[in-house]
Length: 271
Image 1 (cartoon, rainbow, N blue to C red):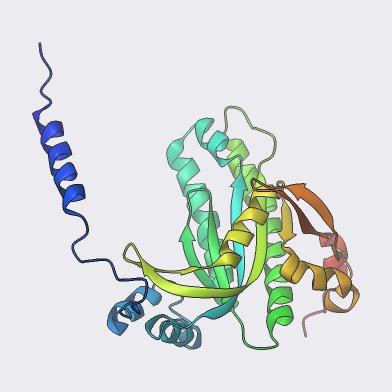
Image 2 (spheres, helix red, strand yellow):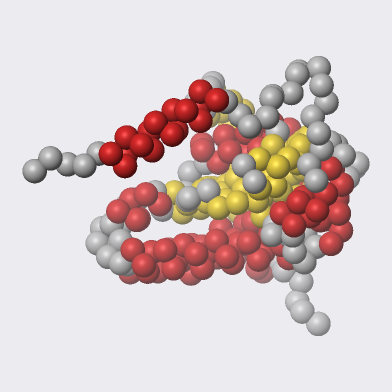
């Protein structure tokens, strides 16, 4: 019996016609300043990313509607070997639930510490912390301390859950984080408010060369963190320096290592 391809062919014809017709509006000339996004739209989109942080919302919304850049610390987080975890899962529903619980917990940590949780990327997420003049290093140090807790939390609470749901458990399961900082630009892309710029690329690149349970900073912030680590971090956190191969070229990176027992021993007692 012949298969009926009429519906598929109709869809393909419609897609082809749409592509031939081009976009619904003419693309702007390179010499023409693009129209700013509508403020109401930007506010509604922004509220989904940082609903509890009015000051942060106002800062991002103002930058978006006025075509103004922001300086941000950017974090890229990936769950190493997540594809294999999904493939080996006894229950995909349990895998999805465990993944959702971790990403939701990480989102809460980011929001509680004045961060902008951008999006879930399938096996991780992107997050941003805008900072003002002179605040790069204090913001970066705060982000690092809080994200180290997020990595430890994954290792202690979620790796056992993934392991219990796996037919075979691969090596290299863990959180890989990359950090970069600098000038970014908030923009509405594909119906959502996001932040674009070189630091996003840098953070993703650092995350891609980080191993499981490793945190790597790019050179922009990493060089200063390494040079002044004794005064910036408590005992138990150190910043190294080495070169690693990225997709583009061999690059200087700054791995951040930590000892949770030492950190906990030096943590101030609660009053």
